[in-house]
Image 1 (cartoon, helix red, strand yellow):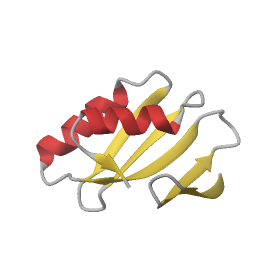
Image 2: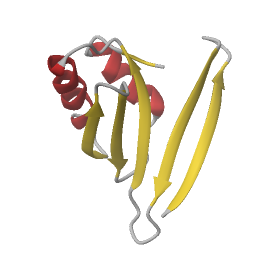
Image 3: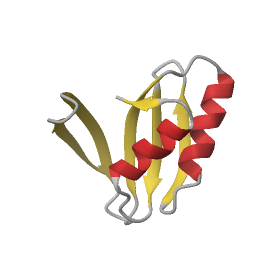
Image 4: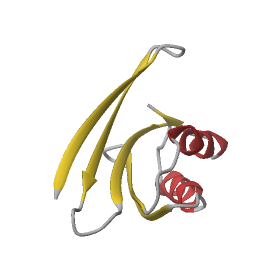
Length: 95
């Protein structure tokens, strides 16, 4: 498995996003991990899981409350703006 750490700086919001992407060279899926702000209970975990699972191209969503992270596989590239919007609609924030 090949690991890539991407750093992206959002000039508009002055935020640094760090996204860990693991590519399994045997498959085309990309594993992505994002940090999420605002989760405090298992209901939050379920809401974030549901929000991410609705996005076309995302599968195998796992949300870790303690780490405040969501990990998922992209079976096709998904625009980060779409991911952020779905998380925002669920009441949380990608940080």
